[in-house]
Length: 187
Image (cartoon, rainbow, N blue to C red; front, side):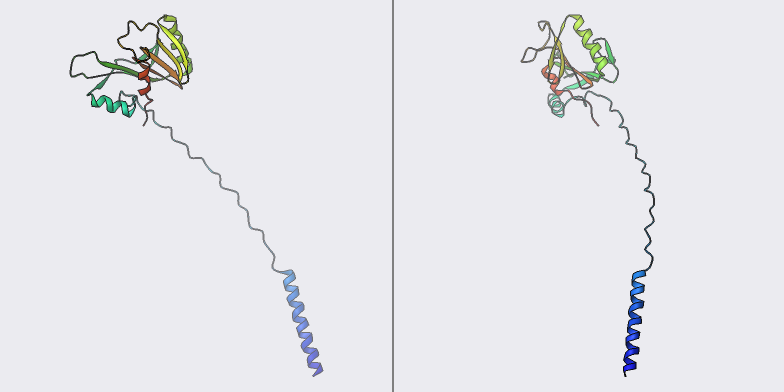
């Protein structure tokens, strides 16, 4: 029986040695194959189509509603917007009023895109005329009528016709207060 025990012990040792050898050697570990990251092609951002300025899209919604309530409609001035001798082809000037009756109760409102160089040219030309004065404000540069005695209308602060040059645009109105209802056209 001792030989059987010896044989059994030898078999167990042989099995243990084989298991240890297999565990130590193991199967070869392969590194995962690295592939290069795909080249991402940026999707071009579409350039938005420019919005054409109209009398209706260059005033606030509240102003448009108020005009409609009073049955006012707008007529664009003929030709391009011109400020201080600078032609602004994409701008618009509109005369709002009740055209069903003959009266002079109207509002003139203008808006146009304007680069800095053209804005400086227009400002200089208006000031050289001698009938305008400059006021710098938080919103931009105001060029307003110097003599309001000949103006058909003034606002509560005594301002008559005024232009506001700011952020790549120019606004114009019969009074400085009316500039607040003028907006850049949006889609």
